[in-house]
Length: 69
Image 1 (cartoon, rainbow, N blue to C red):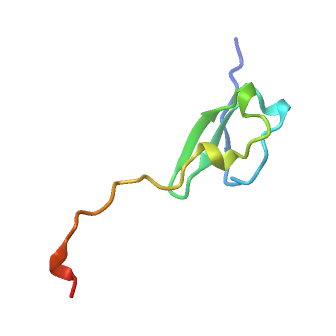
Image 2 (image 1 turned 90 degrees about the vertical axis):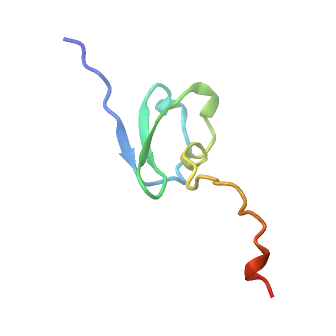
């Protein structure tokens, strides 16, 4: 039976990715839910929070002159 790696759940977005994390799946909290991220070798030295954006940009609101005086 092949043992699969489990997803590591974390709330610490400020943690630096180190070489021993390569190949692991880490679920990073974005403020609402956990986003699973697979750690690759090009991510070493970056912070975990860089790969789980906290906000979804919905665009600028339309120009509404009715509310301005």
